[in-house]
Structure formats: C-alpha cells, structure tokens
Length: 274
Image 1 (cartoon, rainbow, N blue to C red):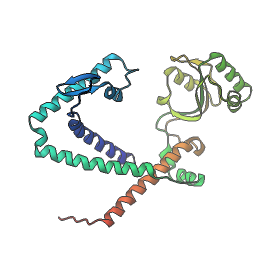
Image 2: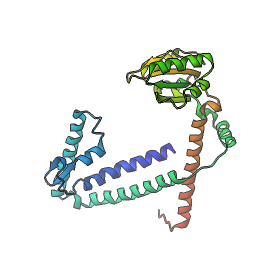
Image 3: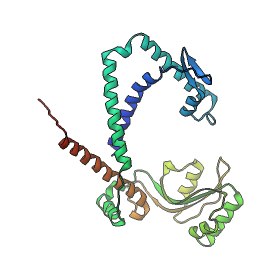
Image 4: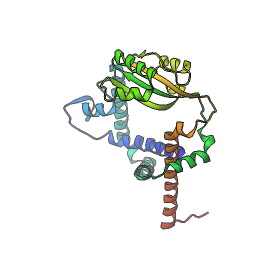
C-alpha cells in the first residue's frame, strides 16, 4: 500500500506541476493583491492558502512571493515562446490528466471503503505477521499528560503516586488546564519531543513516574513509562493494537484496489500486440 500511495503522490506531483503552469496564467483584476506580473495577480487570499500568514515569518513569506513571481514570469514567457502549443507539451498535459484522474479514482476508492473487522481478525493478523512489527528503533510505551498550570501538574503526579494513572485521569476529567493527554502511546525515540522529555523518558524504569517537566511553551508535563522495547524486539499485541489495526485495514484496502483493477480488465476490451 505504501508503494501504491507513493506512486499516487508522484502522479499528483507531475500533474500539479503541469497544471500549475496553465492555471498561473489566468488573468484577474483583483485590487487586493500582494504581487503582480503584468496582468496576473497574486491576491492576499491566494497567499493565505499557500501559507499561514499569521504565523509565518516575513522572510519565508517573501520567499513564497518571489517564487510565485519567478513561476509566473517564466510561464508568461513560455506562452509568448509558443511552448503551450508544442506537441510534446500537449502530450505531457494529456498524460498528466490521465494520471491525475486515475489517482483521484484510487484515492476515492481507498477513502470510501469501510473495512469491518473483529478483535479476533486483528489478533490473527498480528500472529501471521509478527515479525513485521519488530521495532526498528528503541520504543517506549508511555502515558503522558501536559498542563498549563504547574500546580495542577504537581497534584496530578501526587495522585498517580498514591494510586494509579487511571484514577488521576478520573480526578482531572474535564479540567481545562489539560493541554495534552495520551494513554498507552507507543513512540519511537525519535518521535519524542522535546529532547528534554526524551532524556527523562529514557532514564525511567517501567511504571516509573517522571518529575514535572516544563517545556518551551510554558506547559508542565508528567510522563509514565509503561514499558520499553529495544530495537529488534516485537511488542505484544495489546501494546501495538492501533498499529496492527492500521496495517490490517491498509492491507484490506490494497486488496480491494487490486481486485477492482482486475475487474476492470475483465469488463473492458483490452488488446496487447507484440
């Protein structure tokens, strides 16, 4: 499925490049524009659709505008040089249109298909593909919660130490100071951010509770390492159930697409000459 989706992404990239050359040349007379090349305008709305203008810095914003100008001026010059009328260009556009249409169809099939399954289905899939779930990096199964209020974080940690994580969650259920809450989340070491949190997690023992950790955003985090899995080890089913489910569904959908294409072969007049 990964290979198939990569092929779809490549088709999108090729088609987007070709179609962009055409769409960039559309004329408009918008007054609210941030850049213009002759009769073609880049509006504020279009720029906002490319980047988050509220969060991005001016340097990156100017780079986006400059790239738009470069693309637009090259496109307009290509039009003047008759590039769009050349047979090779038309052939690429036609092929790209087919690639894009096929990609949209496969994407629609993949997204619309609803796969039903039972817990037994997932367990059987796990048992049949056990080696595929081996960790390729050190991994940590952990509980993690972050508060905007330091006192709340300290209180939460105290309750966990006195009872357990689940009881602490029940006590703080609905608390508006909670900014992040993940239970039994399995992460590779490179997925744990910031680095200070990773250092704390790697030093914990199974079921140990961390101190309250303040991050760069002013939030206060408490983490509990449930279990750790070294590179090459295979976690038990319960630890990676969400991952097993994702793989199971992806395989089912991939088979759906393969069968769909086989059916198209049988329902269409196809001839191959050597």
